[in-house]
Length: 294
Image (tube, rainbow, N blue to C red; front, side, top):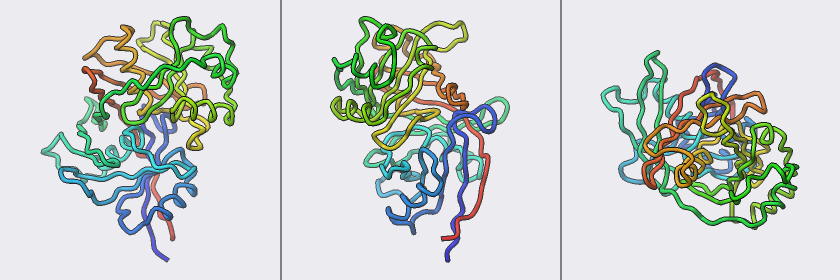
């Protein structure tokens, strides 16, 4: 029986037991894909990340992340941010450097790691280039799949699939309370997402509540077995790009998106859009560690 250390990190969290929990297994070169997927099912978090040796030049670390349903995650969201928070807290990053590179799938993406004024690790990650993959006409069908009143749909804002590494469908609703009332039918939503060529569904509202947020959101991804995710960097990036394109947020300025409040895991995601480049930033907290006896 072999032992394998693991850690849990609350990502996009201001305090323990908030944000999006990530299970992390470093030194995972000796684990094959089947064992990685089995460990992910054991943890039963939305995603588990494994640190392995890079296979592409220029990468400092290679990340492989899986969902409970066994799908490999190829975008840079909380799966990646949690790994870099842990690397910094564990003292495994050169303190003389602020710039690093991570291999995710076939991409090598830049990462910046620093500290806030109160000493917390802060990670900023460049996403893949923004791609607007097409508008979706079946907005009313999505409203049915989400149990949303059709009156809550924002006139003139069709659903749209946007990718900064993973293609998600973005659907605007009139108010934050409309977002909170969504109750998705997983099977119906999965079918519609497949037809739209999207992975997950990000419902959001730009209703102004005078709290400095640009959007309030929830994320559903039955495609990969995630009922609801508390904080989704791979969806916040596309949403920020969409808001800038449509004049609802400014480029080169932090865009603040709240997610997870409806399920008791409030999370703040910050995104800066510069042309077709998107950078996601956030902090987090290492909250647990243990040993797997394999």
